[in-house]
Length: 284
Image 1 (tube, rainbow, N blue to C red):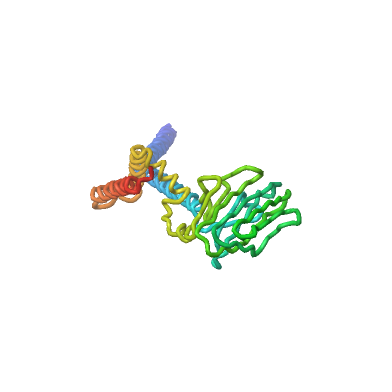
Image 2 (tube, rainbow, N blue to C red; image 1 turned 30 degrees about the vertical axis):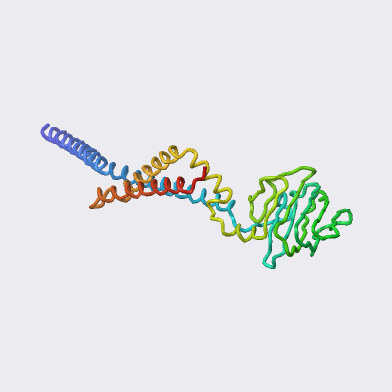
């Protein structure tokens, strides 16, 4: 009887020991989890902030690249892709007048007049049905050319000497399309249907600052028109960026407050610079 009682007591002690071990394990596990959980949250917040910052920088760079691609200084005419008239002067001082309509059937007609002397140097992709005539004084050139479907483009190369101006009267399918007429640069469109350029037009165009060229000039004009909203928007974006930097890089710095003040000081300088830029150059 005593032996059985001791055996039962031993089993109870073992069971109690196992329960104690399980309780201790749960307690220490819970305590460890409680201590580690804030660390995981901190790491997750930092990773999210870094990703957000990288995404913001990527968006800004993409926007700048997009705007720069439309503000290129060099006129590029791509046969079969470019649409409308493209006029430029090459390094040999020869003037090129090229046109196309994305391989669609179109009629291009125009007049080139000047107070100088015109010489036709080359006719590219012209057919027998296309008409080109030069006046007896050689100061007025007329052309009428048709591009059939799936044809790439056509181009005239001319030389003009002893002139002060060149006047263009260019039509597409019997009408004017100024947005598809590029003179010297892409999107450098004339303001009137019949327009003139002087002898120094192409060289002067290269010296115009980028912010006064399309599309930058139109972009800055819109910013200047609502400068209060622009400043407020930049301030909000700046605060978001600073908070991301604070969470990811500054929170463990010894001079945390000084770095934070420095960040906001840079933001104020940026806003002041943008304000002076938009108001000084009078885009409106």
